[in-house]
Length: 245
Image (cartoon, rainbow, N blue to C red; front, side, top):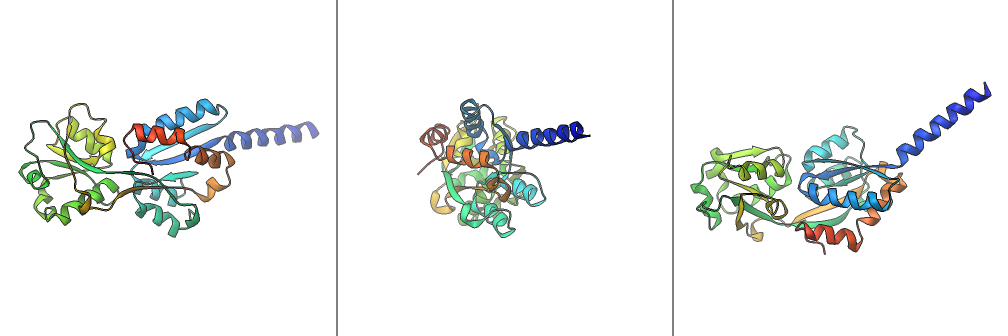
């Protein structure tokens, strides 16, 4: 009986140890490539840790967390969805900080007749992240409304599930262009940046980061958060086009 009890205790200890060595990340899709390198660097540095990254639109990730999906760290592509999780009490407000910044651009084929924002009204199909859940789409809608173009383009907008899908549509030529982040545009194979969307037309693209209540109880998650504040992490972010202050 004693040996059975000992085995049970040992089994529970091993399960607990395995769980504590995992850090679950919910990361905005536009940070996919940069975060993959950050994860690879950290796991090489701390091989006993496993970082499990879930990449999707910020809204989709926030809703997953609110519905009980496990997450230790959340990185959003705008403050809206971070504030949502703070209001829902999944993230303490005093844990939120700014991780990086980005900017909005319009991409398409080199021969596209687009030199200024008004020119996109000449195009037939324009990809944009769904404004309901994709921050890049929300910023694009904000810019287009400020420019008085949004209503004119309603029938031309092709909604994407996240900014990476919008990039893919334009890069494959399935749409005449797409609104994406500068960091995504740098990954395109065929599409090029046709114009920088004037910053005066939309709010600055800000990526807030925070540990969830689960994450605050995970020492490994807190250690990874510390790593993300280092010069090494900042250099990786800058390499992929993000702005780090």
